[in-house]
Image 1 (cartoon, rainbow, N blue to C red):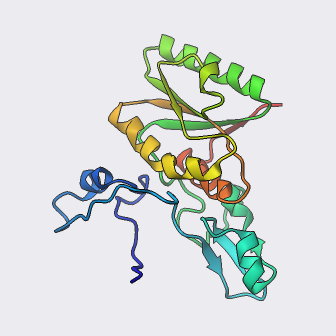
Image 2: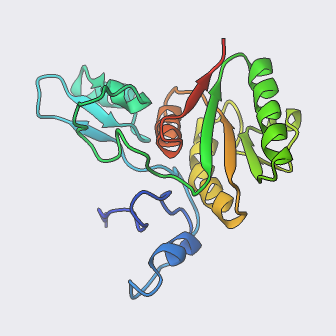
Image 3: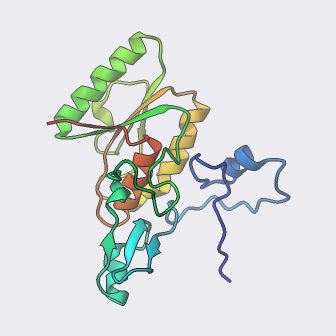
Length: 213
């Protein structure tokens, strides 16, 4: 039996991937929670618009553009998926333009040559911590050892996009539990489900991306 339902979370906050996340958001509002806590994918479904001649992916998920094209032929990806929606344009799908899936912390994504990304994030962390703020870094298993910060979290393996997808929302929620004020995150690969990961992360950051030359 298949069930279609909205995410069991407060609007705008990270989607739940564990029973405790649902309890935190909806305790007292619902009658029952069926606890499982195993996550196969970790991000919401793909949204595709079939109202025009060429189908358009409005929100990436586990089902990728390549998977769709094997079945229905050519599809295109709305540029807003990666945060490039122009001012004044009405978004076609929820959360395309505005801050969404977000923790309480201020999230910044840093893109560029890896050595420069590490140097930039470490300098920002040092500055913020000197001011008394609590910071965190989101990296990968391969890169987490290069940062100087009390709270460094690996989202998964650099070459395993699905591992990052499984962990993303739990990590964002854990930042709130730890009272993190500033989060600096590496960007992740955008092949396959990695595109969905970056789409959600961009929304969580409120489109705040630092691009280093």
